[in-house]
Length: 401
Image (cartoon, rainbow, N blue to C red; front, top):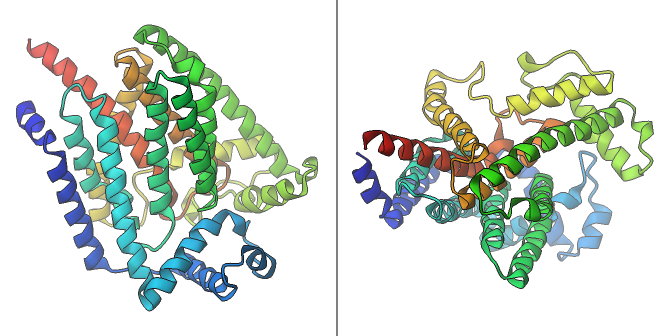
């Protein structure tokens, strides 16, 4: 069995081609799914075209009370270029681009995993998950920025991993600088880019902490870092909760406006998953009450089922999400216990930091009704799952001997 998987894993190009054909067929069958968000982006794109791509005029004349439109500028500009090139077929063109982005993200994932795949079978595992993770690939039929943010997150994870593996300090510093610039670009695609930027900055700060070549010593540092990270997360959550409970504590006008609009307004009614009222709790009135909501959101970010899911949807998620979560936890255990090689430990730690960054952002703000915001979590989870799978294969091989 493992021999057949290894043989298949050596044919990564064929696996990627099969994935592309599968995604393209799904996209062709579904067409473009244009809802209110996509229509709004298209409207903004037309407004930008009408102003001759004058960003200052656009920001001055286009008013949006729902958030900071500057955090969508790059995406709006890209939609404008596509709308100019394809006219009425703009939505279909974005869906085609999304399919390409998904396949490029898959290629990057395979390249990242191959470097730590001692079993030579993890590549097949990753591709297999990319075929069955409905909650991941469902969204490329929507002409939205999620596919682009997903690609940027995976690409930056790969770039940071290369920077860590590079001995030359100048080259490593250059790669980190590129990562910061690309993460800054991600912030202007949609607010989720904040999580990518936070990940990059955290990765740079962790360089002296993670550049250790002894597995047990690295695992010991990671366990300490895990504990410190939990403590820091609580401090951040409490500070945000205090600001949401009493915005007058915040002196900066823009930050206070964001706190009220993106934290308080989205949490004042006890919202956990937006408009899924069965998940709501009592409205928060104190900082600790907000913290409890943030914790519930963090857990709910990984919820595999919802009350209104069809039987088919529940079965698909049971086949895809449950094994993925179990293997992800196995991979996390492998790096914290020192079972993996140092390079796999570092890659797993980076993937975990990226997962935490996205989860923390949405715990503090909102989880979308259909869990669209968790799309960028699947890439780093697949990296940890590959590490977990490699550990399982290693143990099975040792047992047979």
